[in-house]
Image (tube, rainbow, N blue to C red; front, side, top):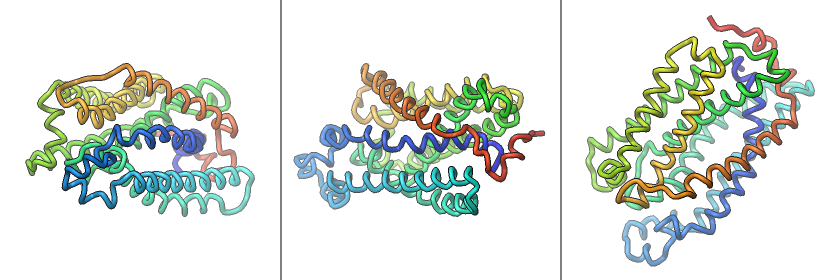
Length: 323
């Protein structure tokens, strides 16, 4: 219902409609499970008591069933939110109330499903490690990525009609404040996990941080602290910067790039424990998949008006101003 949500709604909706493309990206992982996960290799399960204990849950069949369930839930939420949003444009009654009634419990469902998905897809890459805050790390990361992406998209779309006449510095100011909030939330969750594991000093927990701290991977960790958090944090404290679309978008681009490096930090040290190592695929795959996703995103974005023309809050959003 906020002004920032009205002017950015179509961007978020178009992004949700790319979920089938994202699901298609998962297909190679389904065939590559034995290369990624120890629990998907029968010979490794036979040699490891912990893997045997988890086998009823962490096995290829259950993994695929849960993955299909996650995407089905997310696509169902996206379907009804998009359908009711376009019906709102057609002046059908009570659509705003429907959107709110679905979004509130839908947010809770999302947090639970992304938590289980993050455990399945990322945490299980390391057999011995587990963290109770792992899912919230990904919730915060996705929120941070979403806010950064929408800032960049609005900056680009703000150069053309109708958004060129609609977007105000106050809209970017609000989005900048939300970006700062998500950045602080991501930093809080990341530091909380480190602090608790550091204090506990348990072998099955520190196994995650040992290759990341005692090898050249530590430089990436330091870069995440400085470039991903400290520099954007200090910049986003500046109010004039948050009201300047181009400069704020530059900060958002930095955040997006460092979020990818955060994913690298999650994944690669578990395979390259001797030190920092990246292949050409680490660069080309995100570019290739990202290009396909952007093609699907812009294809969906052009199918609807860039503003929800009959949203009850639209008029207030258009004259929105921040003190």
